[in-house]
Length: 311
Image (cartoon, rainbow, N blue to C red; front, side, top):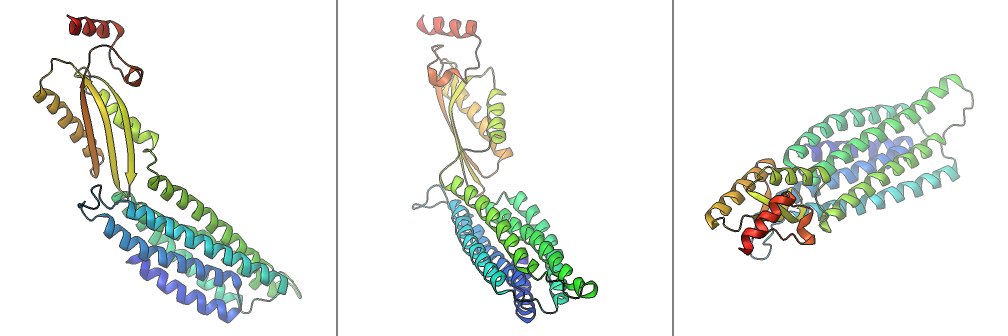
């Protein structure tokens, strides 16, 4: 709600000032803030939807709603950026002047300060909730901080030039600043698209997260003889983790269940919204290619187990 309120105020201010002083860079910033407002609304609803419990139609939950909303946001941002570039090029060719740029400097400064503090809060909440939607919203606002500063500087140069030059002819800075804004917006849209598509295509968890999971499994050595087929993915703030473990063939079902319960508990302490699936297999010492990489036994121990099973 904080992001929605701040962006609503900024859109109104930027549109009014941009129209009054004929600044395409401020109008482009108004469009940017409009996209931020739309992103904030989408994020607000998608986060609520993603936390709905799994049901018969969606047995894996609704976490990917956040990824879908992120993709929609990215498409809208791409459209806005290209429109800004088009308008800026049109103004470059028409050589229009900016009237009363001092008002533009003031509204851009207000925008930068307000968005900085709101984005800081959203980054903290997004990290705590592990939400792609909230983090994307925070990045939108942080991008707005940088672009607002760029527009503010260009307008300040135009404004102060009236006091030092008779005919400065530097009004081209306004549309150039607008193009600069658009390029930054395009980069943000590309990054958001990559992240959203990655989750929709079930890209595995980052190397540091998978590395921690592997360490957690190895931490149960010697009860666990090895592991393989580790598969991970993420949907919103929900993680899905599955793997096979090898145990002593003489181990009871109760004992093996105890190991999986402890391992699941450790993983979920680290990732509370994770769904962990562990398949238990007997280790006969004959490692196939698929489980060799995750074998935790020494060659001598493997040979010993192989002989015991044969006997």
